[in-house]
Image (cartoon, rainbow, N blue to C red):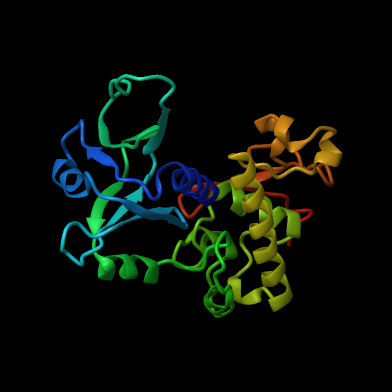
Length: 271
């Protein structure tokens, strides 16, 4: 499943390419035909990412005061395919089961295989936000996350994967951020002190912003790798995720299942 930086990058790109335009919507797969019909011909007013969710805000249609929101959650298999118009003519034929196609004057995108693709009203949008914890890539107050974590006997590893605690963090950011700060994933949330939580939040903000900029997860220090982030391979960009040995002490990296995902940690460096 894509981590939060991917959705924020999509939101950024779609704001640039589509916001302020009247767009055509269709559902080649026909599973979202009714919703596409509601949106087609309307102006897109905004796109935002919150955690692993995308929200597209549309202007009211005609005399209606209702402003529908398109809610998308990619899940495990969802993906976007972007098209840019380079010459006159039709857009490419849909590839696979395209749930939604959005077309503008100069760009279009296809959405395949999302977990959620639905129209919601303002109340539904606010309910979705209420279920999500603060997002490190937004100007959200981390205090809500600290209140949950500081009172919890649950290990910090699963807490970081709980989107109601912190929105947008996935398995790679979980493993890498905890290793950088020397915090073992099995340590109970209540056993973190405030300075450790604050350092964890800052580290997530830093790493996920790098992810948005480069459109991929890059954890390693360019000075240690010997090349800029833009030239790093995936293998070079990660420090402990799916690695055999700790880059700091050389000890073997332990791996086990936590919150349904395989977690990686160094028991020498993390306590």
